[in-house]
Amino acid sequence: MDGQGATADPQLQHFIEIESQKQRFQQLVHQMTEVCWEKCMDKPGPKLDSRTEMCFVNCVERFIDTSQFILNRLEQTQRSRGPLSEMSA
Image 1: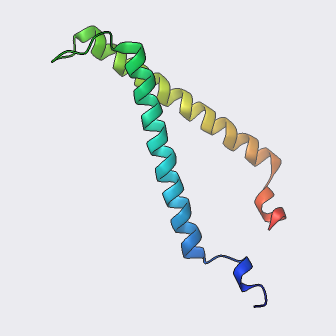
Image 2: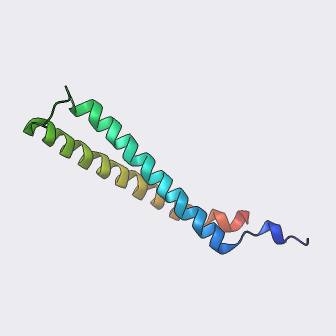
Image 3: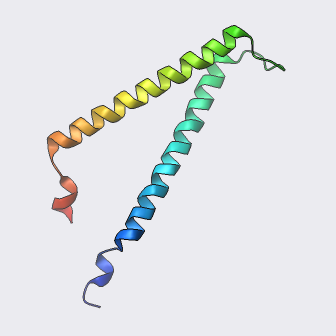
C-alpha cells in the first residue's frame, strides 16, 4: 500500500483512451446525423431526390471539415502551451 494504486496500469489506461475515442466518434456521428437530417430532409419518402442527396453530401463534408479544423486548432493550442499532463502527474 505504498502508492501503487496511484499509478494506473498502462494497458488499462490505453483501453480507456480507446473506448473514450470510440464514444467521442459515436457522439460525433450522432450529432452530424441529427444536424444534417434536420437541415436536408423535408419529408421522408421511399427514395432521396438528387437535391436532398446533395444536401446531405455537402452537410456531411462541411461538418467533417469544421470538426477537423477545430481539432487541429485545439492541437496547435495544446502544443503551444506545452505538456501540462506531465506537470500535473
